[in-house]
Length: 286
Image 1 (cartoon, rainbow, N blue to C red):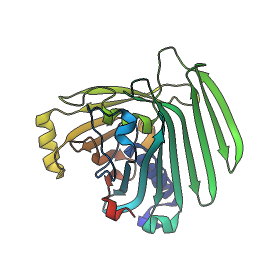
Image 2 (image 1 turned 90 degrees about the vertical axis):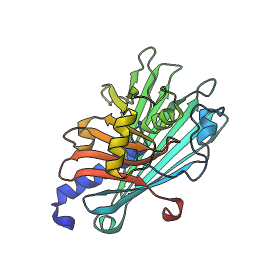
Image 3 (image 1 turned 180 degrees about the horizontal axis):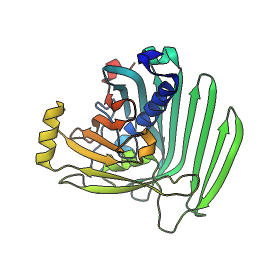
Image 4 (image 1 turned 30 degrees about the horizontal axis):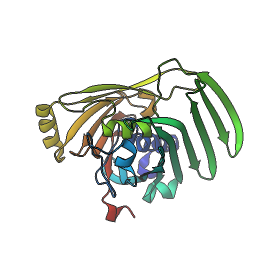
């Protein structure tokens, strides 16, 4: 088997890459580089939707000495206060030769009055592995205070459920949270800021919180230089350990001065060590 991994370990790798691709551009945890269209303008006069409209980000994922195991593409479109972010990721090269996997994540969101932040309306994930398709759709109705979810396998509805939304709680799917964080909706990222983001709950109703801490200026300069990363911001994120099968659940994220992420590392992933992501220049992403 490729890279001398057992079959089960390879399937685990695909799942890890899928989850990492998901978080590269979600929940305040991402890898990045160059925006094809307009980049974020934190603190500017544009609304959050206007700031990212037409943006496209392309990235690659790797581990050990292998740099191109998966690639992904994230786009942001919409109008009249309703927006859609779409992230598609798939295995490449030798990884694609052994197992063909594609994942698509689509977040439909609305801008709150004043355009200061985005709020999730629905979030959909579709995974395709060697012709088998799994789909999950989460829909949020804040008017009725209800979150509904449905799961399909190969086109057949398998499970569904709903749960009440606690008063005053706003759930941010990872893609929505990505744009909120970059825009500054949670607050300024300067001077060792820290945020706790409430992401979508589990099917059983268990809350999932994600913490993101931005390093101070001196710490950022020291760590950035060691990684060979350009100027900008550095953040450490703490996630659910089971998501990556990670011993620590930690990620290290580098942003450029415009809050476009340039590089990220998922730490201590079981069997694979550190899994890294980096945005591709536009010319290399086609």
